[in-house]
Image 1: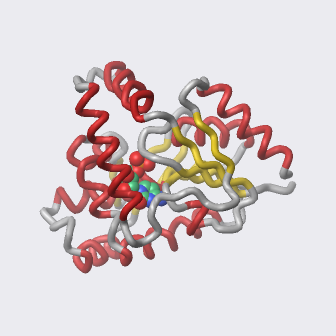
Image 2: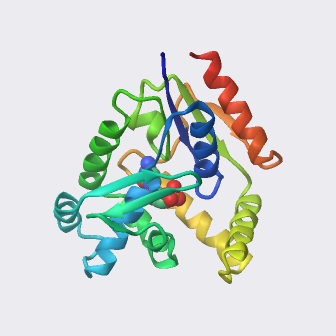
Length: 222
Ligand code: C5P
């Protein structure tokens, strides 16, 4: 059976992971959340008191650990050397440091190599910031997913509320904007829309509608 590769990129909290997961389920594909990999490295670096601006130490750390992703029915579990860090990598400390870790080109080269191996020979939905432009430049379907900052912050706020986490909407808005700026301005494969990507603004769309739209686009390419 023919399978394709689907790249979903876009700014922070645009709903990429949620949509990518549902689309992968609909198509029976592997879902790969590349942000979770940068988050896992960041978590480990913070835990070991490694300076997030020290590129060589981060490269050494990444070479010494094994990051693995395991899909389950409703989520993707993330492991470092066999330990489940799925919850820890979503902490505020990790979120505020991850873009610094992701600026280093040596870190990115290693991550990209791993991501390409994960995607080899299978139908895949991969989400991140540089998938269409760099990781999978030959992906048959490339989506650039956006939503207004206000909408993204309020979705994250609701998500936090459901998980019992107290957050301030204004603070979330600032954090999201700061992360976008850092991701767009870095030298090594910055966040930008691939020339052959389709833009989907999800501000006024439901999760189900977006997943349906992407699944249809994927089916047209099979
Ligand atoms: O997708 P998520 O918001 O979890 O990503 C966390 C961070 O990881 C991003 O803000 C970005 O700095 C980095 N990232 C990246 N390239 C990717 C995926 C994520 O630089 N492909």
